[in-house]
Image (cartoon, rainbow, N blue to C red; front, side):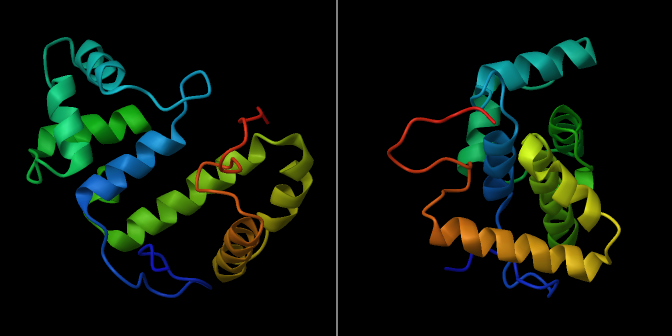
Length: 158
């Protein structure tokens, strides 16, 4: 299965759409153990801006690919909300790098992997990418989906 990322630090194998990237951020930015709603994202963006910058409907349209050409202001607002660089939406290599960092942060939330992550942090970028690829392969072999849960089983907090 080709998800647009490559193993072992290679260049990305395909370019993902803006909608796929936004959807990934939603799935990896849990609010109380769940993905934030489109309304929550729009409200937070608007509150931070001090004005109505984006609507929940527009966030949904971007996430589902119904709208594909947002303004620079919208991309910057979404990037700020999710804590990523705006380059995440424009550059596939940057997106892959940010997603690796997000995966590492998610892993660090589990106390049982903190020591491994700390030891891996001193390795080269190429070695860290290899470890990330290996973890992804192991997750796939164990039937884990992209959110860290076993399909069909209740989610257990880490």
